Length: 398
Image 1 (cartoon, rainbow, N blue to C red):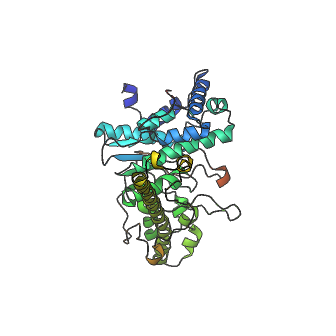
Image 2 (cartoon, one colour; image 1 turned 90 degrees about the vertical axis):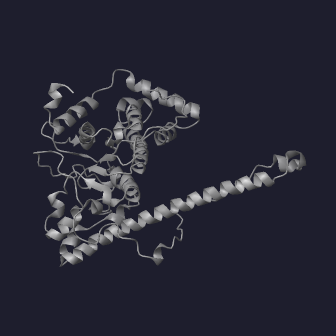
Image 3 (tube, one colour; image 1 turned 45 degrees about the vertical axis):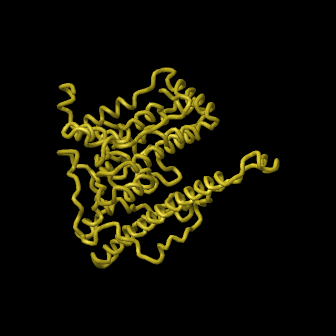
């Protein structure tokens, strides 16, 4: 590090990273990236959208060692050196935090954009107009493609997290990748007890609540389950966790006792935990169906007569798929209704130990700086995605 870097605060370092990251591409670089993507997609026989998302899913985001702390982020915080409508992205605060952690304890922490896969996907500059316009996409289409690719990478990153998850975010919004994609994987993987938030909930959420309820809502395990944005009944959300995780703060404040408020908070957590359980069981069922299909296919192959023994019609007839059919969206009787979902949080009101404020000397109220309506949901990714374990594409050596 330079002498100038050493005297910078974490926030100043993050701002410098954001400024450098936002620099314009060199002339012609956006077109070069786009043409390489188009060539690779054509060679693979896929549309650009299909190819990019599949490519992102194959990137390598595996943790170098077990038990690492993994940073996640969502949106950002206000900063005096930025315009009023701009924020300091939590991505770069997560990057600086990771550097500091690793300086103190090598290979102890990571963040999505710093993984091999995150670095590769970032080099495609999918959010950049120069790139998506050269791909023949308008702004809405370009942002949608970037969001889908980064969401796929983020999901794999969360799946690969087996240690503490450190979340650079305040109030989670239900349309974000952090809430809809990463939190479910983290709850089902490393566990709610290992999810910690670097920023406090904004006072606007906690105001009017007794100390017991404020403490419970501030626990990382609870915050990983709930949100406070009501679904629009005239425009039902497509996100599966939106309705389950919604906690009506006005209704919560109207409840007469801390015990009643506690029950309401835990009920919202239970709804989300049940969805997690159903998703886990659905995936297990899909895996069983696939394995059964493969096993059946192998048995049929062993028992099948040789080509010289078959009738001509048998040889030319197209093979019938023997894989079991899994139908997403079809209710599977998992037996969940016969048992109560295990509570995702402790029954005691004591708060889970959380990390200290990351910004020494800086009072941060991590508000949801951006709160668009669902149909205008932000395209910015919540996390950095993974890197390809094995690349079967036709290039993309950007």
